[in-house]
Length: 145
Image (cartoon, rainbow, N blue to C red):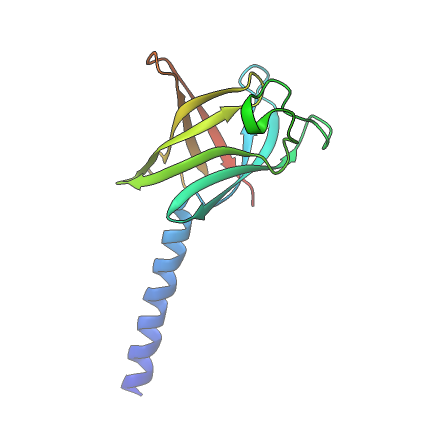
């Protein structure tokens, strides 16, 4: 009986730890918000590949699904927004993921990127794009459940 209780208790701690780790992970689908209108704009799936985080558009909420990135340059020029990586190459450093880049499909520009959670806000992700001049813009994205 003691072994069963110890095993059950250990299982509870393992499951609780996994739930906490998942809640603090940016991996998942996030709703983006338009800075000007405050309306939901798209869903971006953040995923891990090779130890780095990436984010791709999986749903457009205000534009047709066949919308392309007309203002993008290089490989992304005229690509469909759905399926396009807009976040690339973030690495974990303490409680922040940074060192990658983010694309703004509205103007085709790429910026340095960092993402993090404010304490106690596991369903709100802060996403910051930073221009080389030092100017930056921070958005709040909301976890899609």
